[in-house]
Length: 300
Image (cartoon, rainbow, N blue to C red):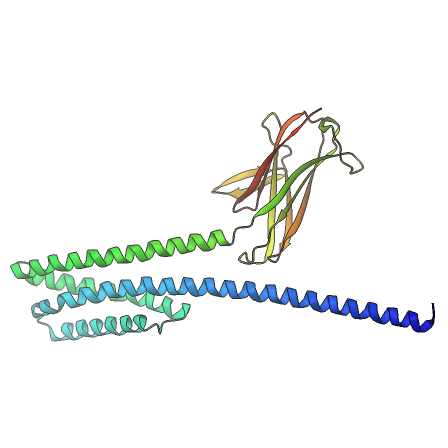
């Protein structure tokens, strides 16, 4: 082969490598952008739901002030009346802001949530004043009854918004859940090769793949494996992990780096006694969820 032919081959190989690297960089960047966009959509959906729930609460408070308008005649103190009108105007102003979709940041929503606590306290104060001055008035009692009915309807709206928020939180949590496929349990010899007879195994190898999920936050994920033998007892006692308010013992553990892409995972259990033939059950956890389980039957 001539020098010119060798140079041509080297040049061609370099071009192929550069093209492959460029394609890989573009793919990784595209996946990262898609994950960021999906996370942004989830955050915007959460913010919109918080805004709707808060608007329902301000509507309820505004309705309470409006129902008291015909009863302010019982407030004889001008200073108290001025403060009452100021609080009422403030509620109307903030309700208008919420309904016009101007409160679009998490910081502003938090400020409005704090302020409504103060305004609710002011409302209770004036209700107490009016009740003490005019509860014997029959017309006032009727108006109070109507106000309660309206408040019950608005309270129902707030409860519905709260339920929607809870459902949204559950959906977002489930969207972030890791999933696995290809769960397997393989007996191994001392040299690492497959052992057909479980009674002669020196290791048990658990393998599975964590599937792609762009909704799951990237970072270190803790994988815990439990292997239960034919007698129903757990093999090995490597430690415990927190799960559903308690502590669960595990056979093997491994930390993996997860960035939204598929990750193959392999864990080993060193056999320190002769295993019995029969059914073995493998369970996989990540600390938050039970990701999967499968049973395997081994003969002598």
